[in-house]
Length: 437
Image (tube, rainbow, N blue to C red; front, side, top):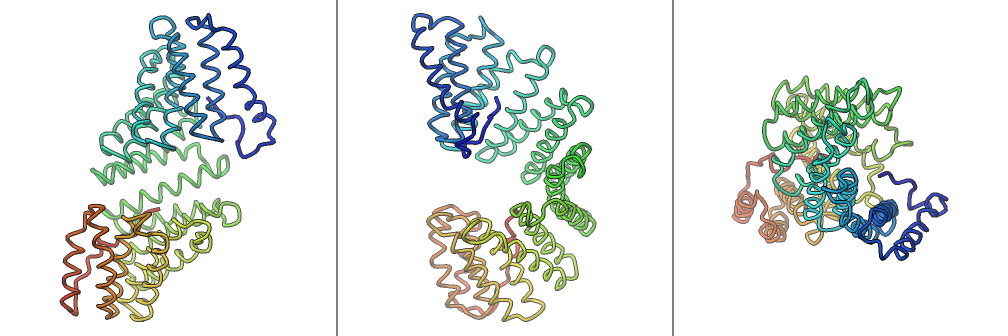
């Protein structure tokens, strides 16, 4: 199923036509009430479902629920035993509708429904008889498992994603389907990158980089500049993370090269949000590089890139990105205070954290409120404002308890030491790692 028009373009003739189609199908279904068990009735229901799905750019939840109802009606006739091919087609369509609905409500439940539908479709769509349908459905299944991995059983669900992508690549070869081959390799690389956060960091990051390089065989700067830049950004992220486990400086430099390649496409005028993302990633990379050497120079570069990102990531337009970048900027300023202009850089760090907390409120984003509040308390303590640090911690600790923050005990120890008025506290930098974007 493909959406043929954007809902935001209300004057688009295709969309206006689509809006009228449900009435046509519903009228047809009224006229065939006595044919509910027949294939023509099922065909109308499947077409009605597809139409509602295509209309789901507007009134998303309502139209997706209508689509699901129509596909479910069609499946009362399109059974696996009587009409296997139609059954598979409708199950795949139903899976897509559930997957889309998962972005609106009941994410886990709807993703599980989607996976079940795709599995049903794959009872018919096998590799030997229906290779392209098999690849498309496997691809859809991979997306559903990827999204489910963000909610629960991350490792298990990412392995399902990787398996699905590898099955897709049995069909989408570089010779026959170069674009789909590249896209699937990019998705596979993303799955390996995510898996590296759970286990096998080095091996999974190397697999991710290999997949991205495969994608770049088709996603060239000349043919597909935007896709090229997107994949270069992903490759940069993988090299940056790989630097934590091997060849630190070499992999940092490779990451920076990839980000700079992406910036050949992502200009502030044409792709401002993507440009800002790369600038923020460069900031994180130089921050990490500062731990390997040339601390002062690399931190200055990190601060420069974060500030470039903030020219676009404003509080008004992109509040969440603004907060992430301000938090990371605060960390860079704090670390700069170890090598120069201690008071000035701590003041800058404190201001940056306070800016981030305009978005990271305890009511809306409690987890991020906790981490950024801790960063703020540390900076206040380093500046000698123990009372200020204690006040911040007293507001933060109940929230940390409520969300079950994994660093809760560490936060409590810091608070107790601040209360006792200790003049020194060994700061654990791992507690304030920049938020990867």
